[in-house]
Length: 70
Image: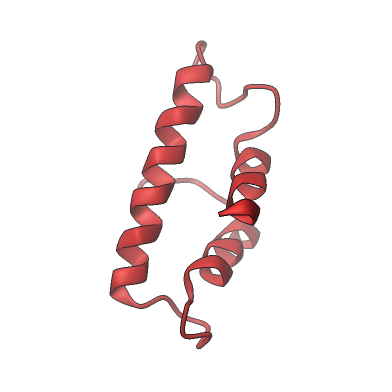
């Protein structure tokens, strides 16, 4: 996908998008995950004006907070 995220955060993604609770993500859920991740990345980049990967919080903290409410 081109994202450099920690194993812990990948675990969070699996937890959120594994609707069948099998410890894996079905293809349709994977596509949905990619769409959501791309949208959040686009929003993040709008605020990351110097493109250093930081706004007020780190990228992973931001995503973790957002995915906890999705």
